[in-house]
Amino acid sequence: MTNKGLSSIKREWWKEAVVYQIYPRSFQDSNNDGIGDLGGIIQRLDYIKSLGVDVVWLNPIFSSPNDDNGYDISDYRQIMSDFGKMHDFDELLQGLHERGIKLVLDLVANHSSDEHEWFKQSRSSRNNPCRDYYHWWPAEKGQPPHRFSIFDVHSDAWMYDEASNAYYLHYFSRKQPDLNWENPKLRKEIYEMMHFWLKKGVDGFRMDVISFISKDTDFPELPFSHEQEFLQHYAKGPKLHEYLQEMNREVLSHYDILTVAEGAGVKREDVLNFVDEDRGELQMLYHFEGTDLKNLPWENQQPNPRYDLREFKRIYSEWDEIFSSKGWGTIYLGNHDQPRMVSRWGNDAPEFRFLSSKMLTTFLLSMRATPFYYAGDEIAMSNIRFSNIDDYNDIATLNKYRKLEEEGGDEYTYLEEMKEFSRDNGRTPIQWDSSVNAGFTNGKPWLKVNPDHLEVNAEVQENDESSSLNYFRRMIQLRKDHKAMVYGKYTLLDKLNPAVYTYTRESEEEALLVLLNFSQKEAGFSLPFEFGDGILLINNYNDDLKTGALRPYEARIIQLKTNPLS
Ligand code: NOJ
Image (cartoon, rainbow, N blue to C red; front, top):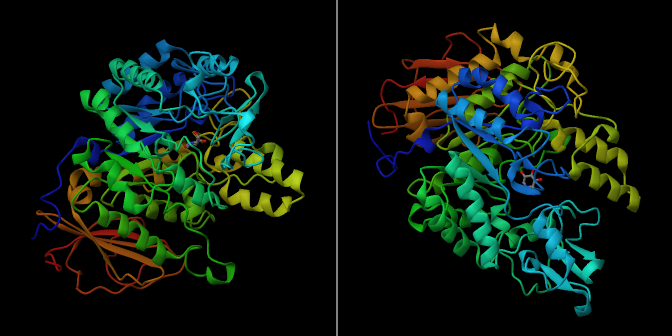
């Protein structure tokens, strides 16, 4: 068999790893205050190990007033009191390492909390030594040029502060002032903090909106009106790559770790500037082009997915292509900022829920990219779809609602939309069993538990060979046993098929055919070769049918006898 596109790829542990993302607030509560904590994750270590994942990424666990659930840090070297103490962290790290699992932390360095000591000092007077740790616009210069804020009720990224008669910049909420990376002292503080955690033994960082750290500090007027235009501008700061190279020299290059950028605003043409290994910056970046795909109008949806699968295939294929000789990609369909994977990309109606969830798991674990798999997706947790605004906790959902109230918008339509898209859909507590609070807590959960936990939970799935949970484990094992699933060349087939996603993964040793029906109807596909003599490696219908049309949401991986494409 041929070896197209394979020989140039350097093998690395973080390319072969499956990353399991844990939202600590929702994973497991160990002290019955209704909030998940580090002690809870420790209790579940054997479960995590049983999945076969290699790396755990934890959303922020540092001291925070929780305006944005930990993405507003008031002390980067302390554990959030809701989550425990430093000795819990040490125990967790040790427990993971003993089980051969690495730990990646969330680095939130674009902004801090307004309750961080740096900001308290900075706002106290214009002469304070920490003044330049943040971006200030003196009021005597007039109104600052408009900047869009992602969470602000008025979308205004400048907040007037009376104490020093100046505005400070906040791309996110008013309680998340942006740090000023122009200041070398601030950068040094961040690097020292990174060393602090790395010396404790952590295995890397997921870097929150790292693409936004460099600002055009003259703050010119911008000719934009749309959010996306602002975000793309924010992701192209003049010194961004200078800072990332410095961070690499000062910190990252001293350790064998995993680094992944949250690629907010980053387009395909720019990604290699972050992850081309010759540039000495980061290893991976996760993009938003896939998760930003829009739903089709209702009348165009049946029997195909709610989105245009041809577009979906185009996006993931084009991202694969970028990394064919340089850099390395990531793949995800859900996280704490997204609705649940099965509700958004599959179908959570009872008859399709587990089938479509397994099909999506097959996709995530058979692409050429490091999978970031979100805790709860392995048991096919779905959107909770709150009807009442009071049930929500997420600042983004709440502030947009407040804006509508103030401006007299259509609240009903907004709530309907939030049932599908609010971040809280992805944040409800993990459903461990069918008891009152799903085994998450004996207290009052900080966010409601999905009532479907009576049927959908880890305990029932544990004992069912054909469950989503056990399918996830089998897919991980398959990825480990077949390196073609990690490094093999990816080729999209039957490109224009609106219901079926088909591709091959081809290495020196073998060629695999992946067939995925993304629709709720039986669907055919067309291939330029016969594959009937291939070996069926996995199938989410638990039978050995390997030819003919695909049943609703069917997924199959077939090892081909001969490589038809070579
Ligand atoms: C991206 C994080 O994933 C999100 O949860 C957070 O609200 C923003 N960055 C701000 O830190």
